[in-house]
Image: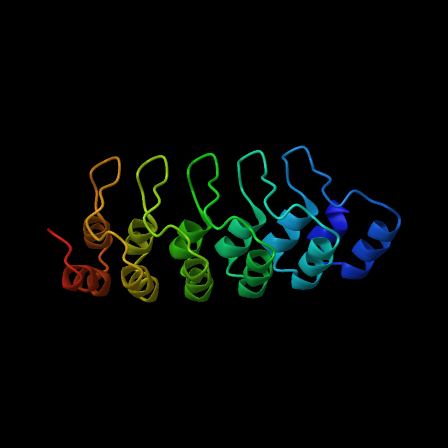
Length: 188
C-alpha cells in the first residue's frame, strides 16, 4: 500500500484496498500512503485513500501530516482535498512547524491562501519562535508576505533569537520584502 501510494499508482491502491490492505499502515518512520501520496502530489491516490477512510490527520514520527507535505511541495489540489476531508490546518510537527509555515517558506502562495481560508493560525510559532511571516521574509517571498499581512500576521513578532521579519529580509538583501514590511508598520 505504502509503495503504491508513494509512486502514484491509484489502480494498484484500489486493488490493494479491495483485498483489505490496511489503509493506515505505517512505515518505520511513521509515514503512510496518504502522507507519501500528498508529498508527491498524487491527487488521484489521495482521493482514493480518503474515500477508503485513511486517517487524514495521521502524523509521521517527526510529526508531519499529509497536509504539511502537500503544503511544503505546493500541491494545491492535494491540499484542497485534505482540507475538505477535515485535515487539521493547525497541526504542528515536533519542531512546531505548521503547513502554513511550510507553504510560506517555499513560496506556495496558492496553497497558503487555501490554508488561510481554512483558518490557519497566521501567527503560530515554531519552537525557535519563527513565524510564517519570518520564513517568507527570510526568503523574500513578496506575494506570500502580502497574503500573510492581509491575514493580519504580526509584522513585529520576534523569534527566539530576537529577530523580526524585517531583520530577516534585511539580512538576506530582500529590498522589496523590506519595503513591504516597513509599509505594513514593521519597526526597525
